[in-house]
Length: 130
Image (cartoon, rainbow, N blue to C red; front, side):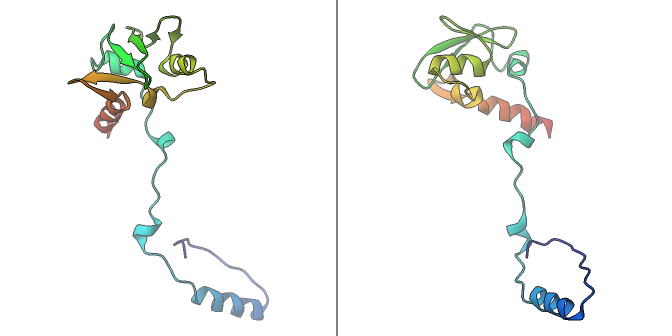
């Protein structure tokens, strides 16, 4: 049914016949339905600092949280807020009072007056890697 290859071994003829009959009744899915989508974790890793190195974000540029809190980008690829310094994930978690935070979806930058998630820049770099 799932398009898998197999090898069956059975000594008893009755069991072989039952298995053959059962397999003959299986409706196979079409190939498109069996296509597996890769997980986000399988995508190439892009360090936040690479956005700074490539000039997609500049040192001193402000990033905005969903609640409008601001942190500034540093040249080493970290962020600095009023009372916290660290990675995009650490600073986001601190501001939310949470044990962890996905900084890629948490932080946005301003472009043409609109907030744009920094994950858009990460996806841009990933598309250039292909």
